[in-house]
Image 1 (cartoon, rainbow, N blue to C red):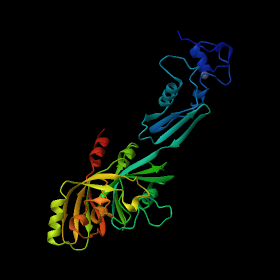
Image 2: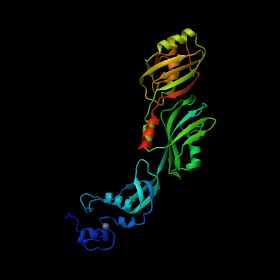
Image 3: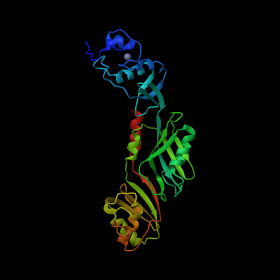
Length: 331
Ligand SMILES: [Zn+2]
């Protein structure tokens, strides 16, 4: 027997609730279920992955069965009448349910990819003063022609400087908000400035995974000539060497001021260019010039003369995303 704290026999109650409580129905606005099930009758024939968001209800009077709540019955009612899979991470449709009724909203689409920056003076994200074109816009505008989203945002795994190149590929997720379609996309986006490989759809949770990630990288720097002795000295000094980097002058407005310990794994130097393999987040230009002592030891310090990295290219990023993607696909 159900415990019923509400004097239902005296109040207006809908047919559905009257039946469950074994009282006489009185038409009108039902204080138990808010007549929500009548309002949900017209919600039929939906397909695909969906999220159901329920808000604004008070569960207090809804005590049909100790194991069900109004929210769980609403969910069940919708799922019985539609061919939906509840999947909050990949939802193509969002069903909002409130006491007033329901509304449908499109979900967001997430595409995982890797971009390669072949020209410099391109920022990664949109620049509000439009000083430079951005990787985000080049890829986002291309995908917008296919998906026609309301908006797009790029979430990347770290970033390179505006004036750096990237031929190693940097992982990102492009978030396409409320797109017209949810078809998968795999392929190459090729422009003279930026190339992107799009590996396909990923769950929403990939955004956090990618934007919180940091990976070791291999860099290529061009510089004025190093002598054979200098090259040998750099290669032998910077072998799994921990360096100290105080926040560089050029980014001190944007980053917390502190000393970071970073490992330089190895250096392979040629006359006018040098490869540096270093821990995620190492400031490479500062590793060269020393930033007036903020980075130590630096190439300048070790060689006893000022040296500079003229242009910086990310040659390789040791990331694991393709393995993660494979696991997501096989699930
Ligand atoms: Zn009712």
